[in-house]
Length: 218
Image (cartoon, rainbow, N blue to C red; front, side, top):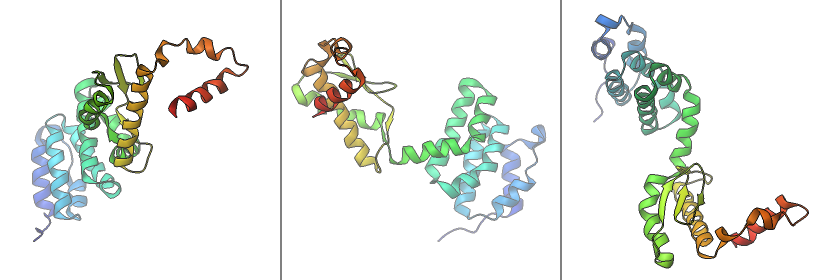
């Protein structure tokens, strides 16, 4: 059975405690009124993450609470939680201004949140990809995060997320295909070629590179 929503008085009491209004002079009345119109589940979620954020910085927590309602209308709660954690991490790394930029730029984070919802994440894919690539030949290759996919022959560098396709399962298969392609470059000697020099012999080097890449992928 769902619990009854908190009233304005109960919400204000919690916010005043979390945000230390006695010392910060933050005004919580308007926020309390907005939260009072929500379901208990959403009230509890916003209040809990406000409490967590306040342990980092009270102003950051207050601004998060004011914008969390909008975020919850657009994405799942786990994405909103990730947004709050990202803001808190930004505060720890670069201070209040950087953290507030995360809170203010909600649209950009939500776009990334949608991407992460369907994307395959490096940290989740690697435990499966490592034995997969070793099974291709038995040779141990390292897999490490990189700005884009490439290999130096000893390490396969992969992006933090692949989100080009519609679902996480499809994007994981793309991760797997990228790993197979990079492994093949080490196995069949692509890395031993003076590729820029070879392609420069063609009238259109850029077109030659595209053709080479298509053939190598096959």
